[in-house]
Length: 171
Image 1 (cartoon, rainbow, N blue to C red):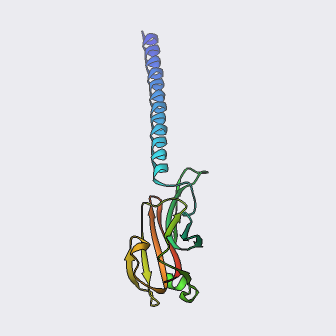
Image 2 (image 1 turned 90 degrees about the horizontal axis):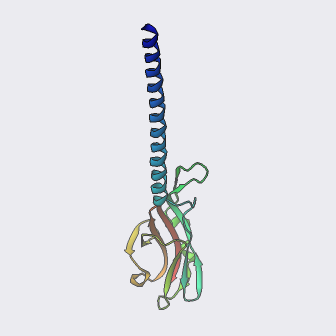
């Protein structure tokens, strides 16, 4: 009787161990699936580009490069699959560029912002020489300031926010 009982206990323990190992395997599989879903959702929130998009401005036929100021940017590291974040500070726009080097533009010509990747939103800020924002616009068509001025285009994407700076002599 003891022999049967010992065999029964052994079989019971083996069955329990097998059931536990199967349960752990399915939990691991479930975690992998969940982690895969989280990674794909995370990929939708950020970009694989390590650097923010470039911005150029077209005035008539002329293409003008902007300078990137400070930014906050997140991207998905392809090697690790993890989200990485970059915070880059900069000087105020009026100290990045010399207003005396402003590029002449005529507001009678269309001014187009050419983002490498279209942002969710952006605004155009006008800076004075004292490092103060003196006006904010949604479009260059609304700009009222004339003469040599520093402009900051502050753009927002899901992956972050970027400041672009340009000095224009608006006529």
